[in-house]
Length: 622
Image (cartoon, rainbow, N blue to C red):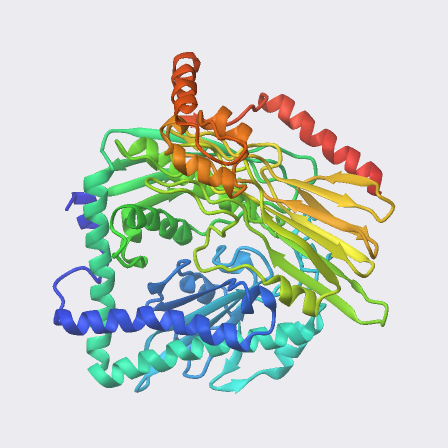
């Protein structure tokens, strides 16, 4: 172990007096518990964004607030620091609630995310925490869904609850919940979903207490330390094996705009290693923007993201948790789009969140010798349709849509898939049953995934016919910049939005709009971006290309132009013509690029395009 790592070793490092079988039982029980927490939440919440799409994240922590099992990283220390009570005032039966990103250091990154935290006691002693947060349908603010595009402060994004006790010693504060729900457009949804979140944390409490009862409190706590230590040891081995010392690599990518005409927005990351410590520096990233795409990146969350990248790439059996956090040093410059200063607006931080994953994996691919990373992800937009129907009933739909997943070493990207593995799409039947709309089409966009030996995933086309007057708000990205390809893989295609009015007129929309009026009978054609390709397209299996032509995923023109594959009108592969076409293309093409960013103009021209698009849109709708 390096001197730096040894000097900074956390208190859980050392020899552990617990046998391997008991440790595995406890670790696997905690792993199963986090999935049980999700299942309880999904079956008790009523909002489709949680119940159908699984937009929630569980966590189980030790008594110090360190995540032992979970997904998004822990900010328990920050929550208690900002609460009107201290660690010594936590009691059995307490449940803390907050949805203020600034009071949990971005552990939840916009106001619709409600976090509930339950301290877990056994025989009067604090033995850990159970936490669950989920995306509520609405928390107030200037637009339905509480994710306005044209807001400049967090005050416009809904009601913010500081860390407070929703349950005090087992007593439920109904007045607090009623007050919060009263300030939302869907109070019944807010109340039910928050109670469901609390039920999720109760699962963690029950299972942890059962483990303490079965094995003893001291054994359980020793297991938590051992799980953290085992992950840390595994991460040290990954760092030593795959992250070379003495090398510094950087990568830049862009979010299109902030929805107010400002863009492109640059993210810049540098990664290097000294000893067993990996340094990640966001210096050079653009300043925070007036609009709502700022991303308050929690330092622990980003360390978790970084570790997950190495774990999933090289040792997927390793548990990711707080055990490895001291092995990463992160610089998040204040006042930038990844560390905006209060009261910057945060509601549509998703484009920044997706792009930081792209930048992180691309920088690692340059740093780690011989490792080909996946290309760039497409998009994961939100869509809100709200209004009052002809019978006087209010309605509000919130949906998360998906773009193409990038190709990955050894496999194609998935079409229209979330970059969070456990997320799902809302069934069209559910939407049509509960909201005044019809889904006319939900299909894969052919030719939108980046070409490569391994193809990027395609985006999707979803066509809505609105059956009642209302308004739509959505945020998307990759309308001006392209999801890039890697190691000869090609860039993917961009996103597109179009309104088709009942009189037949059509209007192209920017990727981020707020409260655009729609009438009964209007259609929205929503097209998401694809994912970048990986590797030389001329090395792709010709028969696989022909099969995708037959399936309608690739056109015959794209098969010939991108892959050098000639497919007849009947869908059969012309092997001789393919061999000749590929030979000609290899002889005449330029050298393959490490990264294919697509036909981008320079930054100034792109900024002018973005500003002009927003100005023209505002002139039409204001």
